[in-house]
Amino acid sequence: MRSMLVSMKSGGPRRSNALAQPAARGHGHSVPRTPASARVAAVALRVRLESFCAALEHATSLRVVAVTYRDYAALLDSVSARKVDLAWLPPLMAVRAVEERVATPLLMPVRDGSSVFWSVLFCRRIALSAH
Image (cartoon, rainbow, N blue to C red; front, side, top):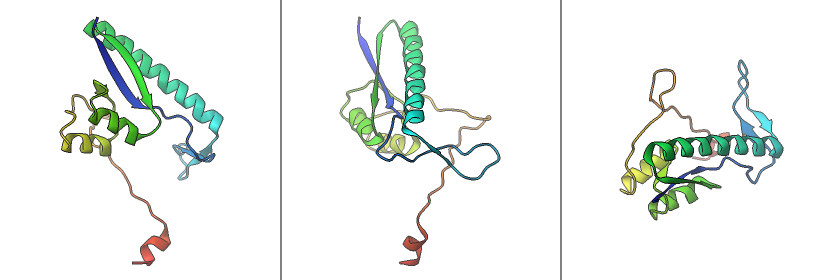
């Protein structure tokens, strides 16, 4: 049986102990997340990935193996090196993969009826005043 490698960023604990999670409903600030809660989130993500791989294996009759990476750079490097067959990439990494001609978008999420991704860039005040 042929194999397919499916990959995504793991979402596990990062170097900092003060990890951010989405703001609670009605609050405009992030709530610090502990390394323990980050590990729980990583396990939940891994369970969803394994479930996706099982469904993909059933649909394709291929052996599907889940692979996770600690950061997006390693994930994109793996895609560029053709080490994985299918990857869930965040918007910036997806654009880079398409620009480098190492990946072709197949699916995109639709949330609340929209496939548009919004993002905000933040910087420290001193960074703006220095220029």
